[in-house]
Amino acid sequence: MIVVTGGNGQLGRQIVQALKERVGTNFVVTVRDTAKAADLAAQGIAVRAGDFEKADEIAKGIEGADTILMMATVGPTEARVRQYKNLIDAAKRQGIKRIAFVGYLADQPQSPFPSTPSILQTLAYLKEQGFAPINLRNGNYAEAGLMTATRALASGKIVSPAGSGKISYVSRRDLARATARILTESGNEGKSFALTGPRAYGHAELAAMLSEATGKTIVYEDIPPEAYKAQLEAATTPPPLVAFMTGAAATVKGGYLSEVSYTIGDLTGIPAEDGLAFIKREIQKTLKA
Ligand SMILES: NC(=O)c1ccc[n+]([C@@H]2O[C@H](COP(=O)([O-])OP(=O)(O)OC[C@H]3O[C@@H](n4cnc5c(N)ncnc54)[C@H](OP(=O)(O)O)[C@@H]3O)[C@@H](O)[C@H]2O)c1
Image 1: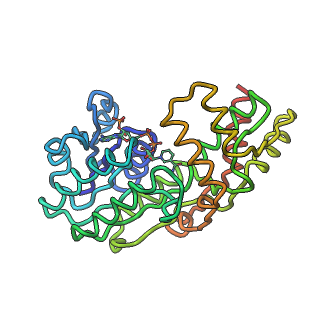
Image 2: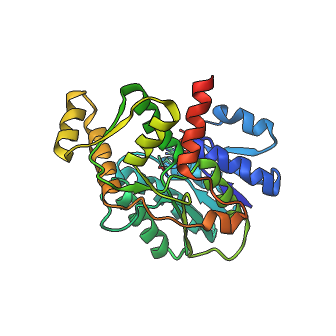
């Protein structure tokens, strides 16, 4: 039996729907607040409580599983690793062998992405505990690119110290289709899957596409990291968010999000949608509405 943890989030819900298409309702979803997942229960999916912070609760949540999808959470490294360990320790006690972890493409040891240490520490812990984790190296969400695009349309510019770094945007839906496949097929233990869109784009290309699609002039301003940080601080951005945003921009600039793979198409028979095409389509929908 498959247990999808964090099944009430934006990626989690897409995975739930993709799994439903493959195995009906023959799986379990854990969520932090079951009341917020009443619609999933109404579809006939078993919904259990599963806050990773509550060791006993998540242990109960995964009971009976043979495969667990371990959702990535948010927050400082120490908190995330503590949460993941609660799940991993419970899985080990219960003799559950197969864990797929929602990782990230920028998981190189030298990556400046703020969440990378939690990913690397968790994969190392899984291995220490005798698991052969399935590492889902998710690319940057196309939906995140859409948010950048939406802000750019309001201000006329994309401002970031990301240089000419590129991003292989991929939609949550495409990630979910591939994830459902990986979870339901045997033999993936110990493998890493780079799940990305079919091409990578820099902010200059995103700005050019937006200008062409909307008739407005959108420019990309590649500013020094210190100036970017100062701008965020002047806008009273909370310090952890400043650290996250500057780290994320450095990650793009360093090329850690530019890797392109065709794994989603290879796994599912349907290629991942091009990231820029996704953003353009969604922007055009908004403009027509
Ligand atoms: N690849 C990318 O571009 C990208 C971008 C942003 C984030 N991410 C990572 O990918 C994850 C999924 O993305 P998303 O868009 O689905 O984010 P999301 O909508 O914010 O969902 C996050 C999920 O994690 C769950 N969660 C948080 N803390 C938890 C805990 N202590 N115990 C159990 N579950 C917990 C949330 O539960 P509730 O529903 O109860 O809140 C929610 O289901 C994020 O959490 C983040 O780590 C990836």
